Length: 507
Image 1 (spheres, helix red, strand yellow):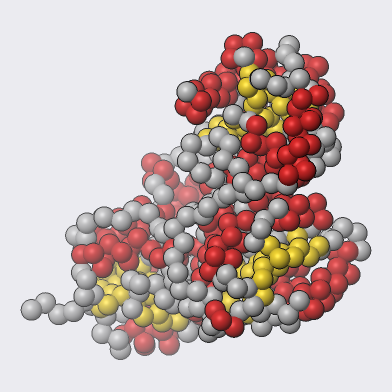
Image 2 (cartoon, one colour):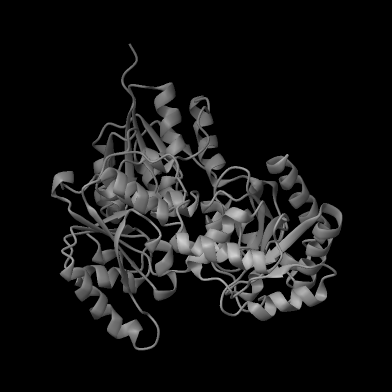
């Protein structure tokens, strides 16, 4: 009988990178069900990684010689180096383990590309694919190719559901981020039906959370001016007065973590890449491989041992007064009987905006060729943007930019057959209301996790631009001065996609 395999996997990198190796464990277990898998990681990640169903043991790197001694005395039969640095190569060389394999990170090819833009076929492979190739040495077939963060059942905080009476979700980021937090609120309410849900948010996003029946109270955190500093203590005091048992913090800023700490809440859960992660009592891994709506749900795995395969982005309930107000505004604009498509041409970040003349041409073609009326929407600074597009177009769009409150914008969504938008907050509101959404992405990419969530929604973007993404949120101007990520997206491409989506969903 073959001796039981004891496999050491080494990955001394960031937590996000470690999460990506999950398919490696699954394939090893599929081939060798009785194998014992041990993962070598940095000390700060050991707690967060415990609980994965395919990892039997975690050992912590304690310096080269102490770690080498532990490896040599543990009786490993196989070693898999998924880091490939001088340190792990040296550990592998002196380990005394007979069966070894190492992933090829193609370091030289990466350096040549960064320094001289020299391309290589090796760079076209995703890191996960390179990890899996390392299993070929042991003739392990590849059955699992994608990571699933729900596999990581992080050790939950020792707290009974019965003890949790008040839960707070802390999200003071932008509009879109707030919308993508709503599935976390709804799932939390489902898991803890007797608990009261509190939400901390910025003044401009209050209406988003007030519209949710699951929310007991919204606490406003004003970050502008002196509020950025004095508000830390004011908001912490408000939380303390609410007797919060658990606080979940999707927002990854230092300020948010500090407020959570100062509030005195005993159970504080945030992401491992939060700037103030040391203020939390529990952190869970953050990975770019998930959509932000799904990623936020993972915070719950700090208090419950449950998997979350997907998020349910649903905000169907809207204020009745807002619904009536929108009906009147559409009636006044002569929209009765017309097929309406929502268009959001603005953004807080100028580089996220597709050129106005392109929107004008698109609106003209939709009206003349498809018989569709565009309704322009936007925030406080978007009215002039809408007026410019109206003047530039040879059509009769309805400009409601700045003319709707946030709750009215939500009520307006149910009147649209399609929503065409830049990467922005209203994009997420549209998907939350089930409106087919066509998004135009320039400086940002889908890989950042903020694309329109749900089946049937689409993103149009320029492929092959090495400068994308240039920033997490975009910027005020193109760093390279050419703005090709938006200028190279043609009106015809967007029109064709809109026409196809309208046919699919309407007919």
